[in-house]
Image (cartoon, rainbow, N blue to C red; front, side):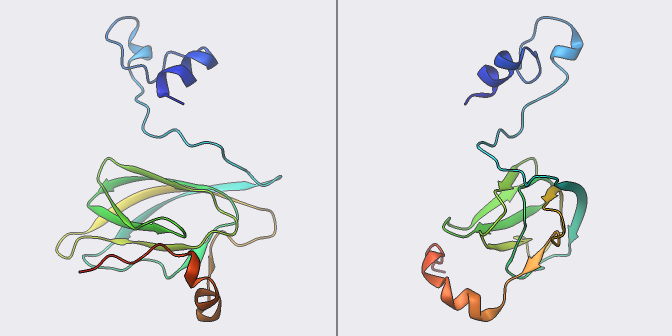
Length: 152
């Protein structure tokens, strides 16, 4: 769904990018529109600021019990979800993941010589950890679900 049609449907002027009208209609810019999403019943949410030093590989393979939405403030994040090819998201870019069973393989700094920072809001199912590491045995069992690795 386009950013304009979504917001027009909801009756808000945010994110339309128009030059006319009151300033509040031009103040917000749509960065990401994720759908469909599933939020666990009774979920909690947390927003964190992550700072990776140059070349830091980030969090080991893991999963979240609910969806996560991020915005890269500085640098570039190497991002990879199960079933999708890895990609680099530069400053000003966004990412999201559905949570649940999907493995998040990479979220580290794609730059060897500069730090990277991002903000992420994660939703968590009640009684579950916000982040759960995936062990080597499960990674081997699910290897067929991982997108092919880039060749250097």
